Image (cartoon, rainbow, N blue to C red; front, side, top):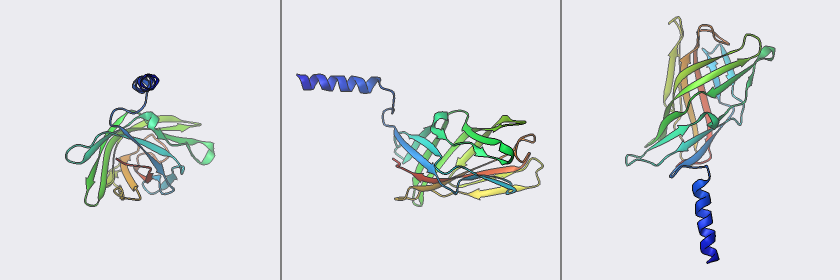
Length: 195
């Protein structure tokens, strides 16, 4: 009888405890030294190594596509130090949805994210951008329409679980550190697990 009571208590505790949704798999992408944001190749800012992005994967569909979500609390990127004592912080402004698809050449990832960039210090402020991210490629043209940038990603490597996810947008004409430039970013690193 005691074992049955213990099982009931355990089941109740699992039901009321916050945590994973049914069928959800938590996967953490830890960024490496090849992760950065580039302002039209004129200024390149490295993301601090050890930054993490947590993916909440759901159940795979019949076609092998696995949906996932990213919440603002799932992105942990420390502030980037700039000359003059200022810092630039990147956050996820809103929850994002995406998918991971198994292909013959690795797992393809894509999602759209609302990213906020906050400059702390003199003349600081926050700008929010809608950025498509993928393991395929990304491109953007500057505000004047004269200069373009492009970057290629890398699908999830089976076994090593290494990946490069890329995104691109155009910087606001009154934003920092390079107003109006075409911006791209590389999120390079390794997953601890994938479903």
